[in-house]
Image (cartoon, rainbow, N blue to C red):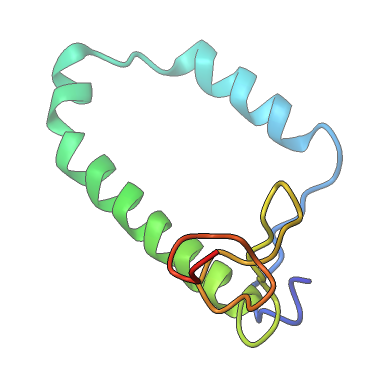
Length: 91
């Protein structure tokens, strides 16, 4: 999946991240001033992550990748289902 979507894999040996996080917690003092000062950066990073996610979903859903299926199984919701009994078909 990563190769198809041209996404770089970020892998670490098991336990590596856990040890690094524990070490950071022991030496890091996060103040309210630090948190408040980084709100704009966090918002920017979340927006960028949302854009990246939308690009991945667009790539997955290109062509026939994402078809809308009614939970009742009675056809699609686009209004062009000739056998359906939805609005606009006179039945």
